[in-house]
Image (cartoon, rainbow, N blue to C red; front, top):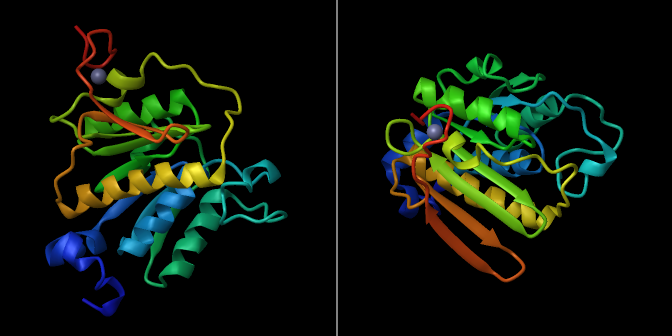
Length: 233
Ligand SMILES: [Zn+2]
């Protein structure tokens, strides 16, 4: 193990670090959450990614999606793959410029964990269903304005994502600021690192909410929802 990771070794341990370096991580959505989480995970030693986003950068993304620049109209997933390589030349990434659907989520086959960094409920639920049915852990995050949330869904151990957000509706162009998106993506990446490294986590099956106006952090247990299309009777 080289010196690159020596400061985090007391936290993740030698075995945990080896797991990080051997993990394949899916990042669904290369927007504000995705580019932040990707950066944290490459820094932590993850070197193999599946990156998915159908979009090219828009000028209105640049207040929070810091790896993009005006005028670079390549797909976000391709720019993100290049970014991962710039941070660590040993990185590899499969880039998929397509929406996440239940069918396309098969691109995440073989991933150790998938991060839900998406911007719409339909794709989030499709991803959650695919992960639940294929035994792949999912770390969900969302942020709107000063409010953010994170949860960790582990198939067979916790309720599914649909149990939690199955009744939510999309907000059209929600307000977002780069600094607050980074806070939530940092929590999301931390949970992904814990999951990969085999460290304990209190976010499994719990909804972590962060109010960045009042600076209150909540943690609520998620129970299987009887009206969930997957888990309900
Ligand atoms: Zn469910």
